[in-house]
Length: 241
Image 1: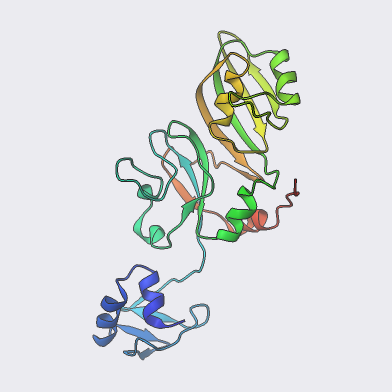
Image 2: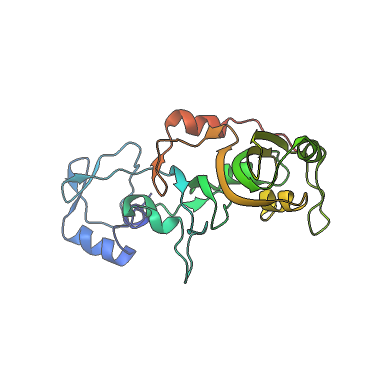
């Protein structure tokens, strides 16, 4: 990889600005000052210093966020704050994007990465990647709802959902539930409950595939996935529909 492209990709400036940095003798590769923008480096092998600070380069970034309400699952928006706006600059320079989406008012687990292959594996409609949610529902959720969700319910547009696993944690005027579904239609959890005459008033995603939300993360906080978690996602066996 060319040294100017690598530094530009890491957010140290445009290609033109990086060339100026190189001309100012601010970059060392394996102890040697490099001024040529076309100089090729292997970031996995070479030691690269910029202004005497080691440049940490990685091809992919994998983040887990506890998405707060009021923030949209997008990379950019002219009116709304996005999940990418929350990121620190050193993470944002890798141009990660959310893997799927959570509604603006929904909280919980959101994966962000620049690994398109992994994102496709987790999002492809041909796959059955389970996602588990906790919800507070207005109305008494009972066994008839558990059975209805197990069979699949008909949404307002006539679509019949795949079976969902509904667990009632508390039933009353408002009910606490957990629901696992294997598809991701627009507003699906809310629309599934609307189909049985109830309304979701709070929604939080707890897990996606093998990855569970780190409950130590406060709303709006995020962290990099561990190597073990990344490997878990990459090796996760999903079946074609």
